[in-house]
Image (tube, rainbow, N blue to C red; front, side):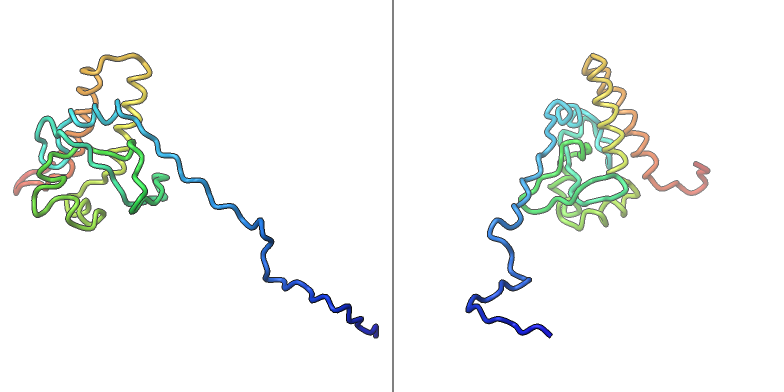
Length: 161
């Protein structure tokens, strides 16, 4: 066995981190698309069908299925994760989106807002890139919203859907 030589210098602990350490992650850049939000506000409300909705409601909860990252206090969602809501269902009513747990609120209305938002954004970008007029884009995206709105409505007695 070799004898240990005492040099008087203490060895560094394995748990000690170097001073450079890990650098903090840079803040996530937010996708801002003001033209898309302008179009969203002109669409029918996803819940009531009121035209125009007037407000773009951003979806805050995360979803691995849609590749939507977590957003919370101090982190705003990308503009592509927005759907049209009238002020009543967005903020005013006692049953507004911002007054409840968001996922539960959408589940109660049988609407997948992330699916709708992803369809709206894909169509919006495609049509704007193709140089279509804003009125044509609003009309086409309005059909997507109305289809999602009608799918969310419960069937009346005797309806076969």
